[in-house]
Image (cartoon, rainbow, N blue to C red):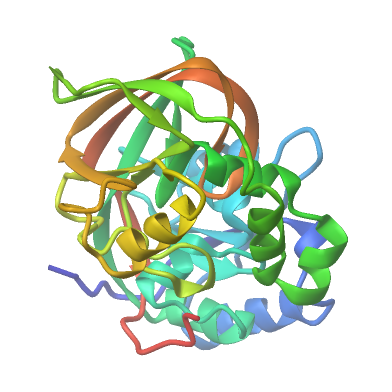
Amino acid sequence: MAQTHPRRGRRAAVVINTTKSPGENFKPTFFRLCADAGWAEPLWLETTEDDPGRGQAKEALDAGVDVVIAAGGDGTVRCVAGVLAGTDTAMGLVPLGTGNLLARNLGIFITDPVTAARNVLHGTETKIDVVQAMVDHEEQGRIFLVAAGLGYDASIMADAVDGLKDRVGWLAYVESGIRNLSGKPVTARISVDGKAENHRKVRGVMVGNCGKLMGGVEIFPGAVNTDGILDLLTLAPRGKFGWVGVIAGILGKNTTTNRSVRSLTGKTADITVDRPQEFQLDGDHLGQATHLRVTVDPLALTIRMTETQADAH
């Protein structure tokens, strides 16, 4: 259950991606918001090309602040969350990117940074699940908060045109998705909670911690980021009109009889494909891989926010 804390004397830190800055007035406005709410002067930390947020989040954590606000896109959010997960320090969100996937799922304002910031300061704290992802048996894992993908959906992220994203937002991913419809399937082996599934010819495998992805589309209708469960989806278009079956399976929310889409749930999953595929975490394309292991870490991250019917689409 969310808990309200006394505000006076508290201190916030802002980890901001200046390439997505909401304007020169945001910083003095935020400082004024803190003063009006009885908070101490905030710690202001800007990301760099070499450090997109982890170092700044660690600095904020070491400074003993009460909340670290990730002001940027999904990449900034992942970096900050990766540091704060497993600690008692809360994370706040001021969405500035194109996707803003976690903010959309939490109902946080994505078009008004000042309101989003005010709602952090006056908000309450709640906990959500995070997911640990190990790519190609790497020693150092990475976290994601919304969704991961191996194959088709990651190709969409990789090929989305930056200039088009600036002009039309998430619709740039629709254009990229159309361009990537053609392609060869791969053989995927999937194991959920140690139970091996049949090998399948697929175009992609997606793992969800939340339900909504780009454009507010409910890809994982049963996904709840507080239940300690992961939702998996395999995409296996068949025949000339195979993608019609995939779309019907996703939007129709019927993955039990539709052979083009299969739904699985569990706490841990191993996904192996027979040749390298693009992969993404929370909308960030991160290269190619042949193996992805995902494990849910229940209620590991504290979020500070105001519950509201926000502009989340």
